[in-house]
Length: 296
Image (tube, rainbow, N blue to C red; front, side, top):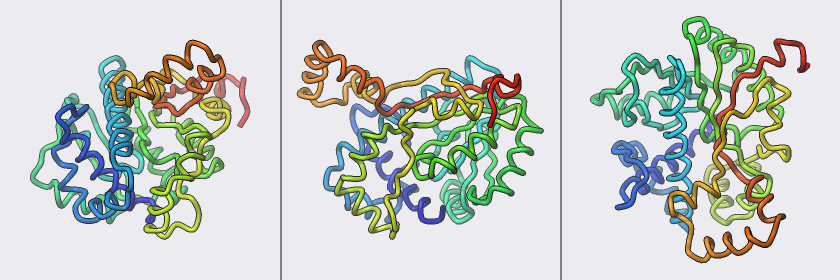
C-alpha cells in the first residue's frame, strides 16, 4: 500500500493538466498544488502524456457524474472513499452540506493533503481516517463503525482495485457486502485486454521501475467482468464504457472514430469487444446472499 500510494501524485498532476485545458471536463483547482514536485517528475516519465491525461480526465468526469446522480437520486448520506489519495471531490463538487464524506488512506498521504488544504473548506462534512487498508482486521472493524452510524453508504474505490490480486478484491467485496448499510459501490474495472496493453506500455514499465515495484503494478482485470462480483453479493446497477465515454466527450482522434464507425457496422466481434472493454461501474447490493440464493 505504501508503494501504491505514490501513484496519487502522478494522478493529481494528470488531473491538474486535464483541468487546465480550454475544453476541460472538470475543474480541480487544488490538483497542481497537491501533485507538487513528485507528480511533475512522474509525468515527465511518460512518453505520451496526452493519452494519459485524457484517460484520467474521462475517468474523473464519469465518476463525478455517477456520484452526483446517486446522491441526488437516492438517500445516500455517506460516501466512503477507499484509498482516497489526493482526491479533492469534497472541495470541488456541489454536494449537500449534510453529506458525510469519509476518506481512507495511509497516514502520511492524508496528513500531507490536510496540511496543503488546511485553509480550504469542503462543501460537505469531511472526515479523514488514516488507515492501511491491507490491515484487514482494522479495516473490517472500521467498516462496522461506518455502517453503524450511516443510513445508506456509497463506497468509492477509484484507482484502487486494479492494484489488488483477485483474492484481495474478493475479500474486500465480501467485507463490504456484510455491512447492511453499504448499498452502492463505484469503481473502474479494466478488461483483460486493457490490462495486457497497459503492461506492455513503456510508460508503465518506467513507472513500475521508478516506484520499485517487483511485479507489474496493475493486476486485477477479471475475464468475467462485473460478473466476478455476483458471487459476493454485488450486482451491476449502471455502467459506462470507457470507449463510449471517449466518444461522448469527443476525446477520440478522428481516425479512431472513423475506425469505430466502420468496424462497428461490419463486425459483431468488434462490437462485442467494445462492450466487454473497461468500464466505470456502479454496483448495487443484492439480496441474493441474504436470501440464501448464493453461497460465498
